[in-house]
Image (cartoon, rainbow, N blue to C red; front, side, top):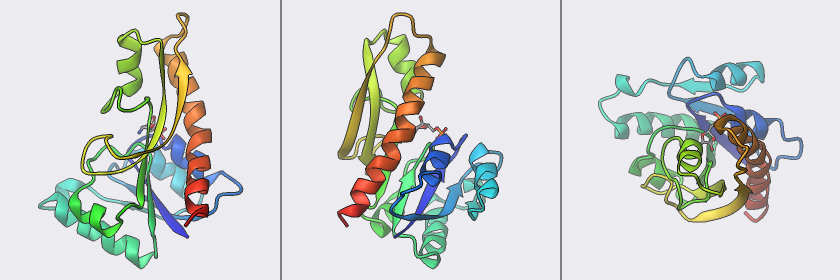
Length: 185
Ligand code: GRF
């Protein structure tokens, strides 16, 4: 099975996935909408081809997604793992990869969807939060949930320490969920 990771930022989840020894698929592409993203540099370092595109170069989301679909199909990609990809996936990609696009989100959805979920939970004074892996649909962090891991927020936590603990969970949970999902396919 060949897969692509979509990222817009640092790419620590991307790295955790590609560094997983027993991963049951080949990550053959990184797709990124930000040339300066750390994920692009990580892909180069690990020898994974990347497609870097600027949405502004296309008239619409449908147009750049059509471009991506063509590239993904050329590479025989059948699964897409979103890892900090900061764009809403449109109908073109959703149809081309129906039930084969998943995302990781740093909260226990449906709580704290959208941007800065860790900050949202922290500043709300929540006593717990967590990590969710879910199928992607046309909404923001709304698709069917595949796996969740809760995490306590300690009174002594800063936003930084909370973020570190969440990332540690993400980096373990995402590869595990990917392996489980692809085993059953
Ligand atoms: C992660 O917290 C992920 O859950 C969220 O965006 C962040 C990406 O971080 N969707 P990184 O680029 O993988 O380090």
